[in-house]
Length: 276
Image 1 (tube, rainbow, N blue to C red):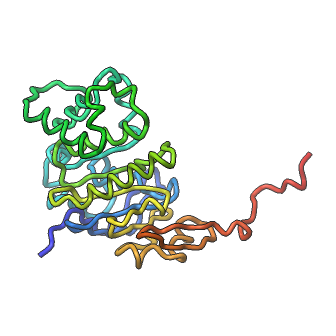
Image 2 (cartoon, rainbow, N blue to C red):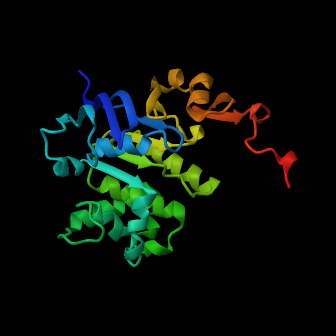
């Protein structure tokens, strides 16, 4: 019997009489890695906040790592969930003097900075993780001096430090140039094949970031699920056009879905012929 990582049943969330999420039922099993796609305002962040326990549904049932919300200690649950986002990068701006190794070490207790006792075993694990992410040579370098791609790898290694069962990467390639993006995607792809690695939820706007090791996809639009399931059945031209509100063509190449926007079918919202 498969182990359930996330179970959302009939989720609805309203804020000030506005429905943000509606009819969300989603199950993630151990061994699956999911991509979460949708435009800004589609409900992705709200859905993530619900999984982490930062907000509660108006209706529905949330169970994460076999712990039903309302019957579990959310603070303890979060210790088993790693979350990497650009907003977390911002929180480390005031700790830029710390080394890459120290940033990774802070992930053991999910703190910004190191306040608890660190053992030699912890240091070895942190340095080993940096090696796995191909930046072991930067262990002693100040975090503030790292490139964006190196910082992102360091932050993912930090999330891995606590051996999470669930890892959420929220637009990890945002702000990266194409070389740094491809290096990071390759690293994540290899990470997903680790036998003791966490279940991954990868949040993105870009279909080409759905790497081969990502097995499933969830598409959101206006707070509702457009499609959900195995990625080759879910990522279709029809479902992506509905999700992204664009006419497009889809091609699969080396296990990754690439889209081409059919720009000649887009009606511009501004009439430049009637300028003053």
